[in-house]
Picture 1 (cartoon, rainbow, N blue to C red):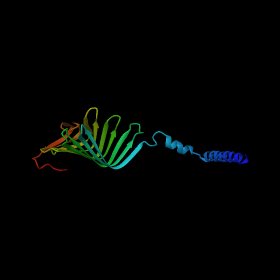
Picture 2: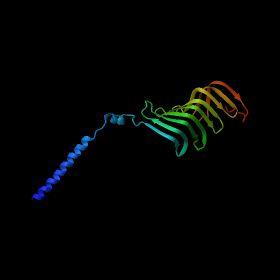
Picture 3: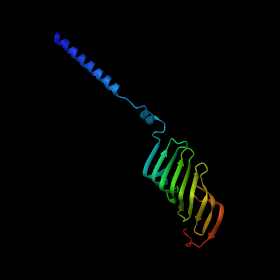
Picture 4: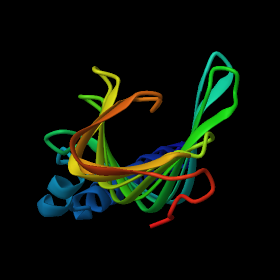
Length: 196
């Protein structure tokens, strides 16, 4: 009888010790309110960064755009959420049949996801497979209008002429364009087009 009582006593004693140890351990855990606030505030995990990225956009299994950038930054908590591509970007545009149509290079690109607009700036250059070339400091693409435009100085080189001016409008595949304030044009023979 005594043996049975001591077994019950020891089980309840150990249970009590375990319970109090657990209470003491839980009581010792503290969280710094400043750390909790920093981790739970909106926007604390909103900036994504990556380096050396390649992006591919395809439609119906056909590649439409291929993009390369050394730096990718996405800020989802900004007033107008955006994605930045920096440090020598390159974008290749393909036709519906998968053929390369044109290549854009620039220093940086910012894409506003909500509006669907993109701004490309710094040594902007578009070269088409026809040999046409556009150079400017900034281009803006409007998804809603499906147009490219700029108010900056532009230089367009074709196989037969060099066109210069301030401001330009074009459709997004660059098959039509208009220089708004023409500074002049120079007719040249094919193969004699100046590079700069």
